[in-house]
Length: 354
Ligand SMILES: *Cc1c(COP(=O)(O)O)cnc(C)c1O
Image 1 (cartoon, rainbow, N blue to C red):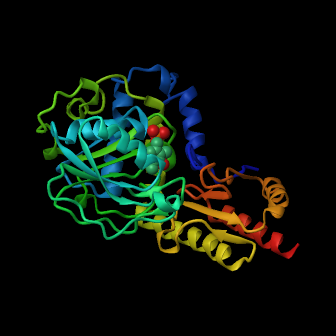
Image 2: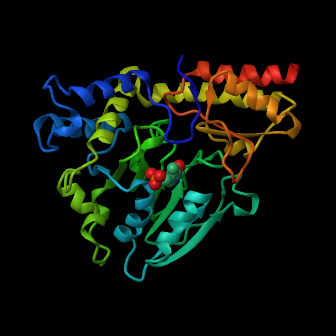
């Protein structure tokens, strides 16, 4: 039997996607060639890229004045590409500081201009989403992280601002409906809800590019990749192919609106047990709880060994908390079935009864 995989990233992918991906490694398109040994400029791969991009547009209802790219370097390279492309020379940007990833984004931006921190939850080890902050009028853009993977907090609303709105959606893209037209740039590493590590999705409003007065290195310039349809250099063909399969899976199942309902059910099931069970407590502020990464703690550490043995024996993988929060983190990305969440909840109940 497969494991119940709650890994935070890279994370669970649909079984049928893995099956198709493994077949494509051996024999892609019935051409007796592997997907990873053909030219990325051959028709079969060009079709994959086109399909992947059109599925992103369809699933997220991306307006036509936006471009969709599949890049490399992970979300971590976007921390640098965003200020390179959007921050004016001698310019200024506003950032929320909501965790380790946000901090890394801030570090990169600081090298290129002034950074104003407008919302900061570091005083409570990032266990909440800052609200009610003001974004200065004179910033080139505002950057936020929609879901803080490590701490289990998630933005339920996005501020309206005259500044460009930029969002790192690495760990909750395609998990819930979003209005892309409210954002100017969205990026996400593939490995948390879309595919294997190795590619990064970027969605950008075309007209915001090319006018910040900066000389941008070729590979860091979004316009380079837009003008070559994400094929300026050899793209990560396998990562893009598997992302395409996962997006097709999501579309066939019913799309983002469908998965959002399932994700809500999974989150309700687990949070209900955390709140009911006297042995556990949630780590994140209730109103800011993430539907993707559920962080929780055992109140009595003497039960730790027993609990760890129980979930390991049940075939659960990947719920040990991040070292900076401790306790447990159950990541419930799109491909995780609700049955796996039920297995975890049953074990929490059993621990209480023992
Ligand atoms: C994992 C993660 C990143 C880093 O992604 P890489 O692709 O490994 O660079 C950035 N932001 C968030 C919110 C993440 O969860």
